[in-house]
Image (cartoon, rainbow, N blue to C red):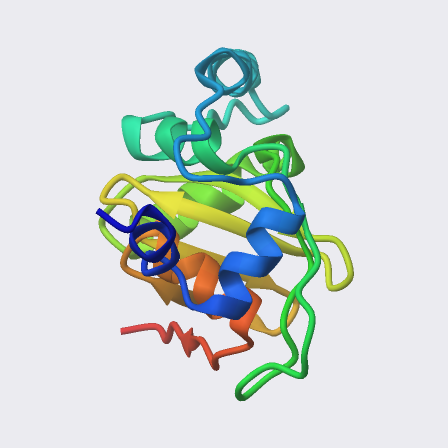
Length: 164
């Protein structure tokens, strides 16, 4: 088995390079930190009583990618690639916003991290789909964490969510 080749096929080369430069590697798993975040989100309620949903897809994404500061290199395929900080506490005070998004999509959503340069909030839903919320609207980034990160790091145009 050619392990170098096998591990390099999960992400495209530019995405793999950016993730590894941030400290990610195949098999990375910090469940303790993910549980700390889960407890912090579950314990928080907004002044109006809004609470965060916490579910396995979010905890798994945090365990593998949490705490990473990702700085893509290169121009991006269609849009500028996004610098990312994968820490769900960026969304701590956005329980209502994430609850509204979840209701609009008929699911539950939970914070994933942020794009520090743009202020966009990253979220994941109960099925593992990834979204960004920013001042221009809500965006679908991909059906799972791998494709969501690829959209952001590679600079692929995300899909704008529209009211239906």
